[in-house]
Length: 152
Image (cartoon, rainbow, N blue to C red):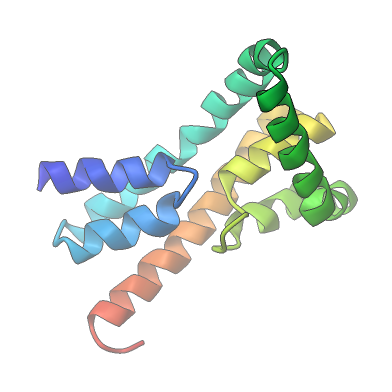
């Protein structure tokens, strides 16, 4: 059980799934449904401060390498095309909606990148990310619970 909980939490901090994958993984591995929610939600929240630290401190050193720089520019362009205009237009609420949509390419990683690119106040962005993660996690949790009971 502990091993499955750790794996669920690792999925929740992974850019390949976040809590959108961690919660169902934990629930389908028979971990207490409330414990899974709390642990995966909490793990997903931790991404924002780590991403901000990375983007503000480590990123500038890695930009010296051509491969990293090309990759970072590619990701920044994709982020700007996909969401930045909407986040810029709607601000705090736009960031919440962007983070809460449980689809690939949205979530706290993309929200952190948008925060960095748009130079949004970090405390407001952190709160927007927490609210967005919570709404997304509740949606995924309820959907998974219903599907496990054969309702959805």
